[in-house]
Amino acid sequence: MMDFFQNVPKIELHAHLNGSLSNRTLLELGAMKYGKDNPGPSNDECFYRITNGQNLTLKECFQKFKYAHDLTDQPETLRYATRAVIQDFAADNVVYLELRTTPKKTVHMSKKQYLTTVLETIRTAQNEIPSITVKLLPSIDRSKGLQEAEENVSLVIELCQEYPDIIKGMDLSGAPFGTRFSDFGNILKKAQAHRLKMALHCGEFEDDDEIQAMLEFGTDRIGHGTFIKGVNLQNAKKRGIPFECCLTSNVKCSTASSYEEHHFKKLWEEGFAVCICTDDFGVFDTSLTQELRTCSEIFGLTTQDILRLQENTIRYTYANDEEKHKLTEIFNNFRKTMKID
Ligand code: 5GP
Image (cartoon, rainbow, N blue to C red; front, side, top):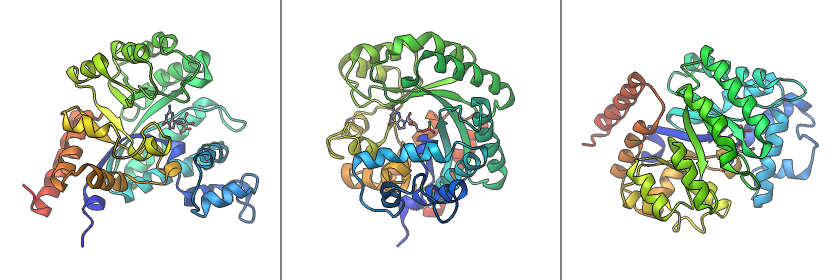
């Protein structure tokens, strides 16, 4: 039987580049950097377990970020990784992707080289893999402090001139603990003044004041939004700010106690703007197809609902009007082919 979830065109708005490296890509990158006979960064047991698809503890899941960062610290491997991620999303029938990544200075690259490598790879992929449109939301890692944040915003504003069709906004992510959003507000305002959209991680932990500050700042989308409640939740609804829900990521990281208890259920049932995303499909061993299937199995969404969920998501993208129109046509064609009204 045709797999509806695989076949339905999909839109991914919350995906971190280095969290979206499949085990195969990690192995290929390992071979590129360290040689075929010794592909593990330190040939350790954990890398072997990860790339052989064995069941992982949460700690081992997070090791994947460490390996990914080590393996993408050169232009060649970063290019390869970016291309592989785009290809994997396209193979999952994702037709529109907003990718995020934190520019990193490594021994082999400046931050500018890092971002330019990703941007050029996206540009090339637009011709070579035309089934998917890809945008970039460069990230600020909160845990790296204000100076790094300033650098990232300046760099993004500079590169926006050259890549206005690809850079559409910015992300604020990384471990939030020990940092205050209010310290980042003025830095992010500079990006906002350049018409960059703000896709901030918001409400990943309980802090009503911080959530309120992010809403007042004017975040355009809400990354996760797990702990938004009360007045803040009503404000988010009133303003129609879309929530990016990442089911498996939240369950595996224990910010949601189970799929059944995930806040997506309330958001969907109460008519919030909401979309389904993978966050880090490599780290959490999932795919957008799998997340939509879970959504249907756990929350009872019909195939019509899933289609509506994807079509709604077009409005939440940072695509231009022409691109949104093309996406609408893709869904209209799918409806026709599947004989769905
Ligand atoms: P990268 O920016 O290196 O391409 O992607 C990996 C990075 O994304 C992680 O090191 C982390 O900073 C950020 N990230 C990935 N998933 C999450 C998440 O669920 N929450 C937060 N706050 N940050 C995340």
